[in-house]
Amino acid sequence: METEITEGDVPPYYREVYDAICCKLEDRVQGSVFHKLLNRTKLPPITQNQIAELVESSKEEPLSRSALYKGLMLIALAQQGKQPSAKLLENIAQEYPKPQLGDVSGLESLRMQARGNPILLTWTLQDLLHIDMVQVELIPEKKGLFLKHVEYEVSSQRFKSSVYRRYNDFVVFHEILLQRFPYRMVPALPPKRMLRADREFIESRRRALKRFVNLVARHPFFSKDEILQIFLCFSGPEVQNRIRESLRGVGDEFLTCGIAPTAKELLPPDIQAQFGASRELIRNIYSSFHKLRDRAERMAFRSAENATDLLLFGKELSTLGSDTTPIPSWVSAASSMWGTLKQTLKSLSVEFALLADKAARQGKREEEEVVEKLNIFLDLLQSYKDLCERHEKGVLHEHQRALQKYTSMKRQMMSVTVQSKEQISAEQLESRIMQQENTILTMELRNYFSLFCLHQETQLIHIYLHITSHVLTAFIDSQIQGHNEMSEVWKELKPKLGGHLPNGMSSSA
Image (tube, rainbow, N blue to C red; front, top):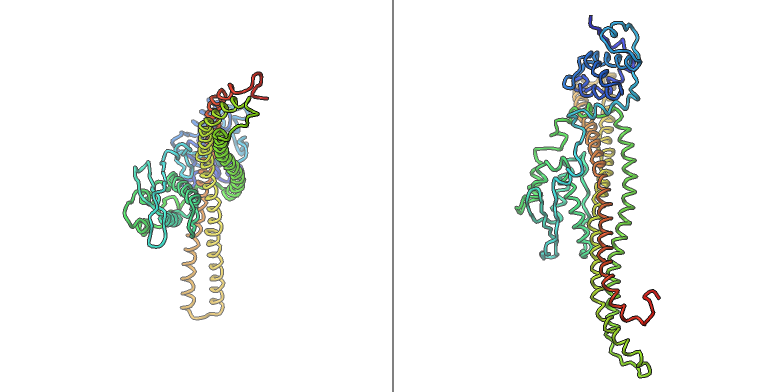
């Protein structure tokens, strides 16, 4: 006779395990999750297979609550050294031994890792980087009626497109992205300077716009949206209106995502604690990367300064070698040697100009391949911090306000009932209460969907953390290349001076 285990029979630990690993939508435990649980026990594979057969579990078929409880009982007995069998189950009366599975909260990850769980991102950094590469380049200034304005050529490798965009086009694109994806990391735009901008500011803003559009184009969810394609491909004159029109009748992601109504069921039970811990961790990561970026900027700046100094040093040597002031007769013994040395000094400006060029290139490599990679990750981290603030000040705040309004209306309803006022007033108030209840329900669903998105965006941050290896590789390669190139020039330069040193004097004297 098959043993049936009811909810009231089992100890609390069994119910806690079920709640941790069951699929809330189906009220079942996925077969693949149960097999992961078996692997966690470290029992011999043959014993794991015996337990799976006894509870009729396969990786494709889900388990009922009763079947899981049987499985937990068999795991515990097997851990005690007993051989799993149907007879063993029949001989167990009211004894439900506790299996050694570790902390129940740690079992949640088994369900989260289950195949097809939509909350998990399976992207790697290379996957994201390969989605698209967008170039943003300045085009010659066009003079408007009163002021000059800057235009950019935006080219997408993915769409094989090239369009012209002004800063205000980026602003509208950014605004609509925030409306379409209020619960995602939308990077901030660089500021718009009202007064006449200098070249340094314009170049800095171009780089920031390039980082912005690449982060958007490589985002797993933005990359699939029509808004991005319009911005990167539409070449008509009314691009801003076209972007705005794309949102009309569509709504934000909460209204169009099929997962939104059931997002709560997909979240881990300790999502609030995870959110707090992740936020603190990312705050610390941001601080460290900010310091790394500042140091990298200083090194790139020093390389540029070194290039300038080398060029000026060579020019001064050339000036010295070009001096035509006559040499006094009483030093004529050394005049022959000085004249020859002057010719050498005059020619050294070529090598020093080459050294300056190598140093300048190294500074540019450090700026483009190291500093910019750090900046793009810092932009992403900042957008995560902004998202956390939107969640707390937006969704949670609106939910709290809706609850307060609902409580006030309920009190007013009780007051109307006690005072026996006109029936129509009570009916109107009851209708308003029902509307407010719907509002609260919607706000609760939005809150859980916001947490769902935050969970995914947190994963995205950790995927991008691997950019650290890209930064270090670029930094090391830049230093090796720069030093090797300059070393070759220095080696070619030294022999030119060797023949003009006095006999017996070394160059280190």
